[in-house]
Structures are given as C-alpha cells and as structure tokens.
Length: 107
Figure (cartoon, rainbow, N blue to C red):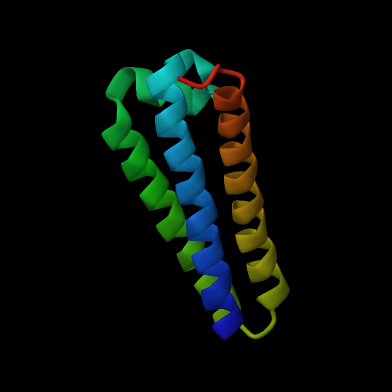
C-alpha cells in the first residue's frame, strides 16, 4: 500500500508539472500551442479554471481506480499499470509544453 501512495503522489506531481507548464506555455504562445486538441478547445472555450478542474477530476478518478484495483488482491499489477500510464502522460505533456516554451528566446 505504501508503494501505491508513492505512485499516486508521483502521478500527482507529474500531472501538476503538465498543468504548470501548460499555463506558462499558453500565456506565452496561446491556446493553439497545445498539442492535445481537446485541452486546447477546452482552454479556448472556458479558460484555465476548467482545465484545472478537469485535471483534478482525472487525478481523483485515476487514484480511485488504482485504489480499487489494489484492494482486490488479484489486480495489483493492473493498478500499477494504470498509475504508471498516468505518470507517463503527465511527464510527456509537461515535457512537450516545456519544449514549446524553450523554443522561445529568453526575455
């Protein structure tokens, strides 16, 4: 169970890295710079608050799914896979945003 707590904390950090770099990127480049068309459309239509709310909801859902799967003794590997995928998605999103920001000259 301690491993799952660490995994959920790591997932949260990765997703918050993605959100923080998203905010910085869109302030500098606009919503068109977002690689995910769903997030870009969500941001263009509703702004930062809804993007953050959706991110928190997705974190809660993935955490709940992971907790349910860990609780069932036959599914700990599936729980680890679900959380690991969420970690990778957050890191890839944050790195993608950072790359877009890094292409700009420093001000």
